Length: 144
Image 1 (cartoon, one colour):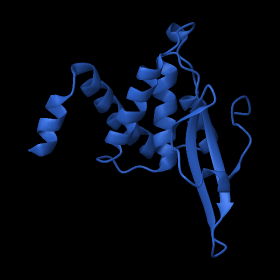
Image 2 (tube, one colour):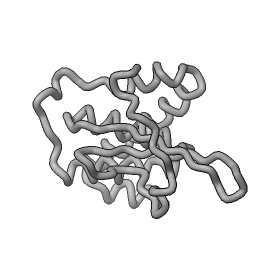
Image 3 (cartoon, one colour):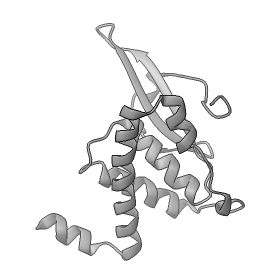
Image 4 (cartoon, one colour):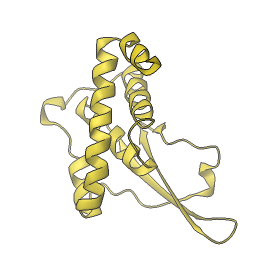
């Protein structure tokens, strides 16, 4: 009941964006199992032709990140699926976004990876206190 009242407390625009985010997270999660990573990134990285020339304001960018973060509470997802969903939603509103993937070696020698999205030099989603411990892989744009 509490969740429903929170959902109803959102504006219609925020509610739509939250629902889009949840659906997109589910689709991306399934696609991660079914498609090669290069194909998934190529599809996620496509810009919308009708969004050319548009540029989102900071509030819109924050709304997208907040919606994906909220949706991730209810739809099982990883940092990679959240980053891909954020990138898709930002590009749909004409905002350039870049997927970043970093890797590091853990304290016990285990492999760790993390994904986040940057737009205009700022981290939109996936920021962590210890992000500097990750070695960032080269950007995937233009290579897929």
